[in-house]
Figure 1 (cartoon, rainbow, N blue to C red):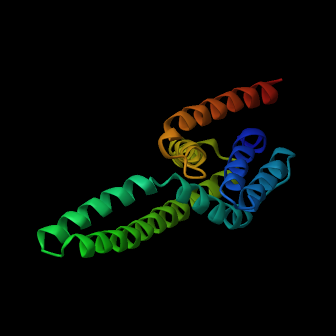
Figure 2 (figure 1 turned 180 degrees about the vertical axis):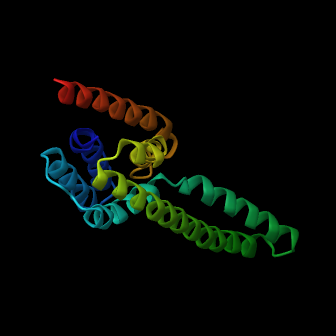
Amino acid sequence: MHDWHVHTVAPLLTQASVRCGADGEDQEGVRRLHSRALAGERVTETEWAKALGPALAEVYRRAYPYADAHAAASAGAHAYAMDNDYGEERAAEFASVYAELNTDANARSFAGANALANARALAAAFAAADEHALADAYPFAYVHACALAVARADDAGEEWPGRYRAACERLADGLAESVGRVAS
């Protein structure tokens, strides 16, 4: 797991962060902890949690389907406004403001709640080197979020499904390589 994060997951997430204009430091902090653990050094649960919290918040923020949620909120607000005789100009303004406020709040809540829950579970699993605890932390959901975060980096628009498949392939190939390295 540590080898995979060092060689595949963290670099992929760091590249996505940089494409979005961030420095990628949160992902690099997690990579450094995985490097230490891979080298046999004990990393405490507190250290894991401190690094994973902001890194996972970034992953889940990027994984959130912002464009789709914004479009749905805007369409719903516009329909409401038109049904209530706002007029086209006021309806468009209402829809824009509502969609932004609604979608921003939902994206923050999604990222914060998922990061909080998963940072604690992963921190405990990594610190204890407990494969059962790691399995209980829903690793597929984490991998799915990572792939979505990469796919939706820099507002990929309609290209995100192809980017998602490519990210999944890169994560899978990296896992196979890590298993090969660790097994030999």
